Amino acid sequence: MFKNYFATGAVFCAIAVILGAFGAHALKAILTAESMQSYQTAVQYQMLHGMAILIVGLISERTSHKLLAPVSQLFSVGILLFSGSIYALAYLKYQSIDFPPIIALLTPIGGMCMIIGWFSLGWTFLRK
Image (cartoon, rainbow, N blue to C red; front, top):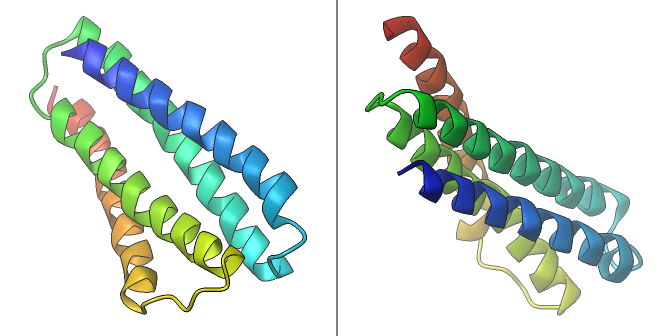
């Protein structure tokens, strides 16, 4: 199972690098400073949580704790909702398309998934 964590974390990290480069080169001239800062935050959070999934993989390789799977899932959903919604907003702005307001509502839900993931990881260590 830990191989899935490694693959997931590596893919999220690779995509973070790609999207970071896209933001630095293609979006910098188009986005406002505030929007660019949000975009950079999305890239940083994606990279951080992708690496966290890799670490969860290392932990799961050494121990078979059932609470580690939800941690990885929460981090993954958090990346998709938090970072993904910010990327979507930036892309829609890049294409000069009005965005549906629901996209902006996904960001805090994704952030909550990330927070719950960290608390769940801590709880896993306390229970062990």
